[in-house]
Length: 70
Image (cartoon, rainbow, N blue to C red; front, side):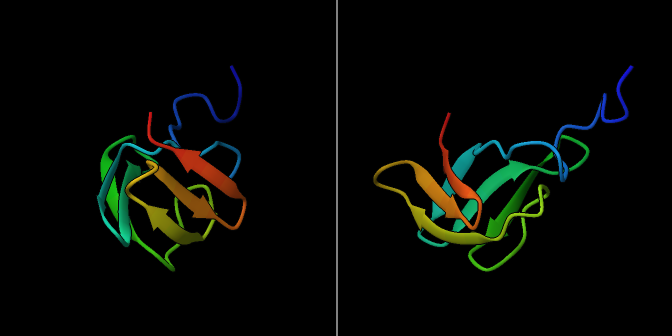
């Protein structure tokens, strides 16, 4: 068993974009796996800062790269 088993999101896990709820907000799983809303400027559970949301392309940009709507 690895130290992070059972943890959905965290500093060593990539973010998963569940939904784009507006031009400035997204939904990603929190550290318990439940959906949580985050706005531009906030830190996601992985520690990445949300920089930009593009609802048309289904992408969000963080300071660690792009995450795409699955």
